[in-house]
Length: 287
Image 1 (tube, rainbow, N blue to C red):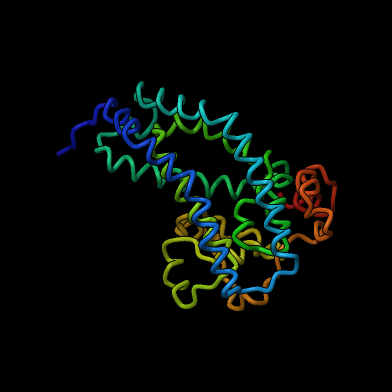
Image 2 (image 1 turned 30 degrees about the vertical axis):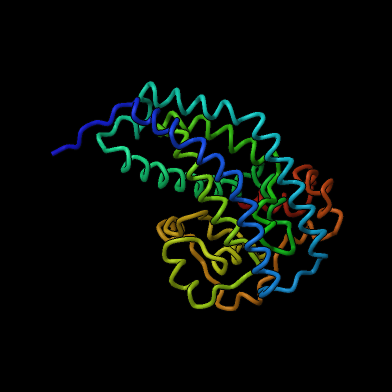
């Protein structure tokens, strides 16, 4: 027997009830995760950093603050309006289903995570997208601040595509905010310069873990082009892009053509997409 259809107004009310609290948590969560994982890294680092740690953090976090300000200004309001318009008009896959709101909520998170896997993979295989994404991979010292190191152009393209995705999938704003919180927590966790020991083996059956994501940041391209998942690790297993390195201490991070310190400065990071390097040409030749 089919479940009754949940009225569209129910989702709108849920958004109104949850949104203020979720937004407050969403704003505080990055700082909480940063402090906790930075402390963990300080007490028990997995790798010794090659750069001055504080300078490295200031550079990455400056980029993050710039991104947050610009993307919030350009896409914050329009994302909320698009999601509310989608729910109100019952557009998209999830809004047309007969499932209850809790089932649609969970399905929305899974679909968003599947999209993030695809988006991440495209960033590695589409030459134009790689030019932006390689700024993230050019960090020779991966730690929790690396999770915030993305080019503004990459964020802008991602946010634009998500606007189109919202009515296609039928996403509500509370699904988007909750998923963003999961992404913040998970990306901070698996970029952190830490080890969770034997627990990594079991956790990576479900979610992306530090040992799993360290492989993705390897300088060796076959390892870089693996482990694209963001929250759930199942996508890499399903699509056969899952890869492990049994000796994670042997990994080296960064990109050969962006090792010079000039590419690690704020100006250098912002200029990374414009650089015509052998790295960009080799990427283009493999797609």
